Amino acid sequence: MLHEYGIQTEDSTHRVHVDMMGKKLFIYKTIDGITRLPEPILIKSYDDWEKHPYRLVKPGWNKKIPTARGTRVFYKSISNCVDVCIPQDLIDNHDVSSYSTTSEKGRIATDIVISMMERGLVPFAITVKNIDDKKFQIRGIDLETTNFLIQVKYDYECESRGIFLQTHENNPYKMH
Image (cartoon, rainbow, N blue to C red; front, side):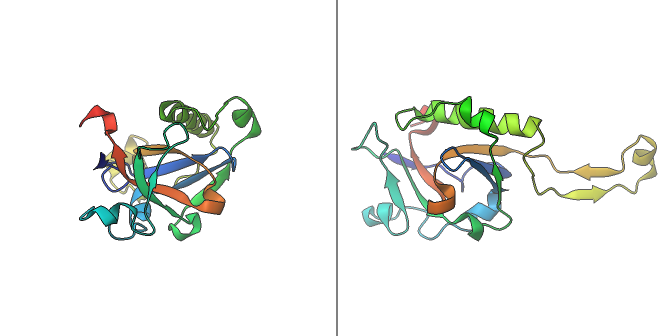
């Protein structure tokens, strides 16, 4: 059974989709992705599960039971979505197959994003506030920026097929 759990229920401020096949990251504000979700997000009848453009995901290792529900959205239709090439050495250092588990793919995606952030290769659209308060300026603080809460997703063929925006999942965190 799938439960509502996806981009519309998370607390992230930003998302990074790691496309190993396309060798790119796709970076955007979570709210900008949410605005691209078509109705019906919530399931009211059995027919809504796969009502176009939504689809059920049945991975290669499990063709019978759906593990997620969502839709693919062309990345250029998400406001301010930025694509960045993944350096070849990071691709070469991570082996992924269609039979890798969701956890393995998530770990690899997170490792790649961390490595790229440490190299200064992940551009985020940030909100900057000019500090006019003399007390802060005396302490050496002239600008304040937003904090980020980032959701990393392993995805594939984002450029040609679109970014997968998940809305439901089978037993997230073994909560159900």
